[in-house]
Amino acid sequence: RGTVHSWTVTHHPFHPGFKQDLPYITVTADLSAGVRLQAPLLGDGGAALALGLAVVVEFADVDASLTLPCLRLAD
Image 1 (tube, rainbow, N blue to C red):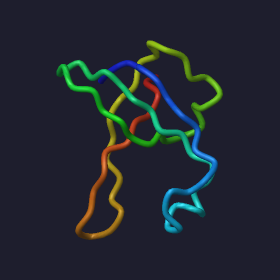
Image 2: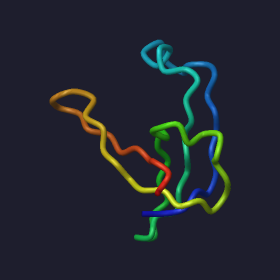
Image 3: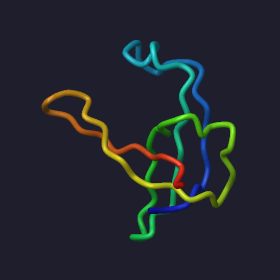
């Protein structure tokens, strides 16, 4: 678990492989473990983003050999 520190909305892909995901939101969160994590936001919570909102870490399987952390607004 953690809280939103900042975020950005990406409209231009830094790599062609991300073009199909545009626009996407990347959140920087302060986790309760004392670590700051930057990861994509899952779900439709972008319109509700605000500093200090609670988030949870989830993991997305990209393929059989790659799993990435993601963030979702907490319930």
